[in-house]
Length: 351
Image: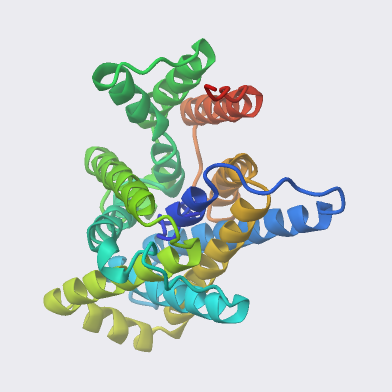
C-alpha cells in the first residue's frame, strides 16, 4: 500500500519519518526544480505502482503447474524491512547524515512504534487473501475518517465544512464499495474470500498505523535532532527483529524460502517487491524534504488511483458499476481533502 516516513506501510504507504521530519513543510521548490519534481513523481509512481502490482500478483497468482500459492505474505515485510534499513544506512553514509547528539533518538526509543509498525502492515498484507487489492487500497485510504471522528468526540476539535464533506465522501464511498456486488472473477482470484475479515484486518492496520504515528511524534518531540533517515533505519531494523522472530517461531520463514527455491519466478517477484519498497521510501524522503507534505500527499493519492486502474487492467481484477461509484466517491473525497489543505491559510502566531 505510500507514505514518507521511515516505516513502511504496505504497498506504498507513506513512511512517517520523512513526513514528520519536515513538519509538513519542506523547502519551497525553486523555479528550476521542475525536473526534480517530475523525477520525484516518476520515482514514487514507478516504485509503488510496481510494488502494488507485484504484491497482488504474489497474493493471488498460483505458481507452478500444481497451482501452489506463496505460503507466507508476512515474510515479504521482513524482506522489505531488510532492504529499507540497508537503503537508509547507505543513504546516510553517502550523504554524511549523522545523528549522534543527545537529542537524537536511539534504536531503543523506537521499540514500541517498531512493534506496531510490524503488526499493522502485516494485517494489511494478510487482508489480500480475503479482499481484492483495489478494496484494500481504498480501505486504507480512509484514515482521516476515524481521526476526525475521534478528534471531534474526544478532543472537541473543529473542522471546516469541506473537511466534513470530504470525510463523508470517503466513508460513504468505502461503504458503497464494500457492499457492492463483486465480480465472480475477482472473487476467484482470492485465496480465502471473506469481506468481513479482510476489511477488519484493514481496520486493525489503520489502528496500529495511528498509534505508530502518534508514538513517532512523541519520540521526535523528545529527540528533535533525529533525522528521517535515522528513523527509517531504526524502525525497519525493529521490523526485521519482530518479523524475523515471528516467522522463525511459526516456521513460515522456512516454508517461504523453500517455496522461493522451488519457484524462482516467485523469488524474483519477492525481490522486486523489496527493491521497489526501499526505492520508494527514499523517493518519498527526498520529496517531503524538497517539496513538502502537500506535494507528497497529492502524488501518493493520485498514485493510488493509478494502482487501482492497473490492477483492473493488467491483473484482470474487474470492478462492477457499484464498486466504481464507491471508488469514485473515495477519490473525490481525497481530492477535496488535498484542495482544503492547499487553500487553508496558516494560523497567525500570537505575538
